[in-house]
Length: 336
Image 1 (cartoon, rainbow, N blue to C red):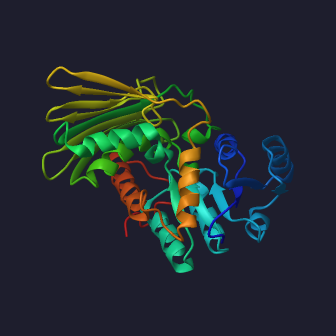
Image 2: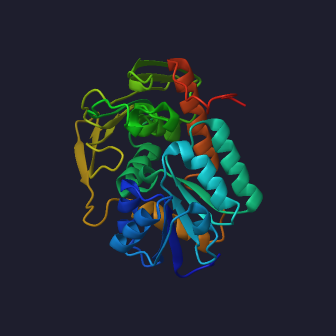
């Protein structure tokens, strides 16, 4: 692995999010679009040609065995993240794995263990953590100017017509609103407050048994709380509010990658902070962070640690268990 300079990036999985991510790589001086891999050789070739990758591979095994590949972005459905991440790590390839990191805590524990055993970089691709707007919001909340944060309210919902063929409703693929979009509200709470002491979750189910809508409450030892929800049954504002002792902060529309945040103080002062996302989709920030870590010789991010990903996955397991949501073939011995 290089210590500095240009990194050869590869994408494992050639779907929509891989396309957005690859376009953002073009904005980074240290990133080279090197290889695209799919189980479908023609799909990989078309993807590579359209996005500007030098090579394409019709199998994931061929991709990870290319000695020129430095970093692999795993962009397959989350039901396959464990297997594909282990494949990469066991071939000494640095990995940026799309969220949800895995289907459950047990799988995530295997992945983090493999990273450490191979002394090879691994990070969950939770792009929100690296958005300039989110970084600024956390800076304000942790500065104390609004006092202690006592409550988080966050939602993420959109209409997704039911189909037995859709990944969003397929339990074998980890379908349901929680792991697809509800993971954002849960992340906000776990990132700021940590794992909850107590939680309650209620879910309405789709015909496949996946969660169509879910409502979650967290309670922490010092009285802090979080009220979180996600749904495929209707639209929401997709915002996140942090209620504090001296005011509040709101991540406005598209809270996972907001262009504005609002800060209101109990004195009556209100300030809207705007962020100019003139280039890219917002994935370039996490990609740059991975390269910065590798340049520093790190095998783990100090910003989005493996333990934070484990904490998030464990919390999601607890939510699913309380709501009665299980993934067939994946949830045996759910908790270790």
